[in-house]
Amino acid sequence: MKRIGVLTSGGDSPGMNACVRAVVRAGINAGFEVYGIRRGYEGLLDGDFMEMDLSSVADIIHRGGTMLGTARSTRFMTDEGFARAMTMLETYQIEGLVVIGGDGSLHGGQKLSDAGIKVMGLPGTIDNDLAYTDFTIGFDTAVNTALATISNIRDTSSAHGRTTVIEVMGRECGDIALYAGLAGGAETILIPEKEIDINAICRKLLEGKHRGKLHSVIIKAEGVPITAGDLARELEAKTGIETKKVVLGYIQRGGSPTARDRLLASRTAYHAVQLLAMGSDSKCIGIRGDEIIAVSFEEAFNTEKTTHFEYLDICDILC
Ligand code: F6P
Image (tube, rainbow, N blue to C red; front, side):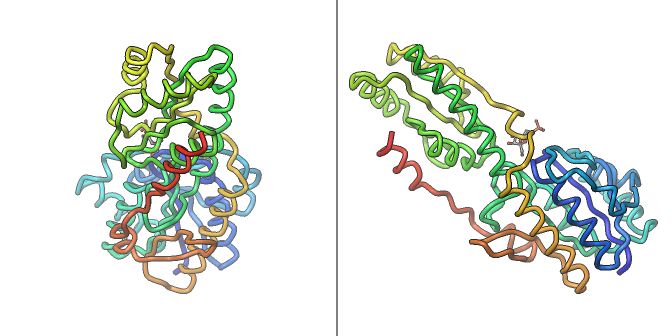
């Protein structure tokens, strides 16, 4: 194998640039020609490729976003789009591909792998919803960004004696809420993995108020089936405590990656390139404990996600 490609796909996550940098530099070091593919699978089927050199990835390790651009490609999901992507890989004689993205992007990688391309999947998403790896690249930064905002909101909530419902991202996974909520001293954490009990939240708010609590912060994951606005209105109506809502949104996806995310990005990407150089089958790379692991796509998608429900109990006791 002489040529490999790298692309970032789906929602961007802090640390994607650190991955691209590591793939390019480790790839060149291993004797590959490395092509960057712009805008994820969209660029793949459009043949939007550029040859990378050592300096093309200079000064990006600390930047959020992705220098390659990203997209959610619906065209790639069609038979015609997929065939075009295969034609482009053949035209450029790219036999190995590093795909950096979340669940949908790695499923796309599996499809290419089934068609004969050696694909290494790197878990690039803030959601932490890929079960085969303890952590995804970008999750730690998103948690820390959410945490900084929660701290600001605590200040103003106490000043006014209010309750604030803060909605964080994560799709159907509650990990951003769980980690940022516990670290941020939230009174209640709501995740899609556990049914919501509005009366229990109200009792807690009222008990807190009567023992002199100045504010309450509720962290709600976006996958919980009630909007932050509706929840805030319902809590205010039931408890009589003024309740505001804040939806953090895209600020969680931007910003300079934390040391943890840069390390995870650099280590997993380096490992991916080593596997390609060794002629390995397609794999998804991740981390378990402090060990970098590589599993088949099948194993990656069949692993059951661990949710740290105990964080909810700890939160209950500590708030
Ligand atoms: O998967 C990352 C993520 O930020 C989710 O947390 C969120 O639900 C989604 O992407 C938003 O997607 P889009 O950028 O397409 O609006």
